[in-house]
Length: 176
Image (cartoon, rainbow, N blue to C red):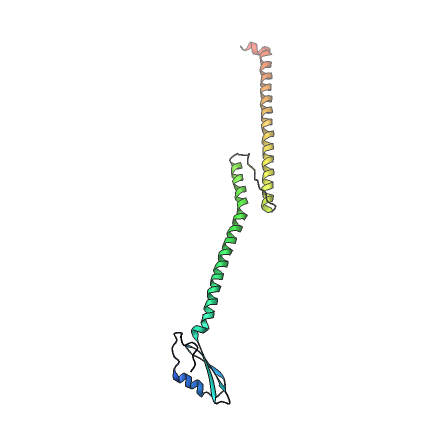
């Protein structure tokens, strides 16, 4: 019997398996064994039988290399997907965090902040609205402080007028 896998470490096939394959006169067929697959086929008017045995390790060698390649490819793509998700999350949340920090500064009465690097998406719209709102608050504070000064001046002026009128009235001199 010719064995092309002779230098590999395989068990020899039992003689009864070979005899069973040789004695089968039904025509071509195969047998699934623990050690591998056994194929047989009659040749030259049934007087000769061709028997081919393929060891299981030879059959699974290609499958195991394909499995290893698929596993490493899957790991690489999972790592790439995680990196892509992290980068997307970072670049999405970075302007939101920047806007939140600016809002916290305004909360503590720091009106000299503004958001720079405005984007062209919905977050950029929020940033532009925040900057315009902050500018309007600054204008209102300016107007309010001007009104306070005018109010103080008016109060001082009225107090001066009232006091000077009080000193000029005859009733003031009577009660002294």
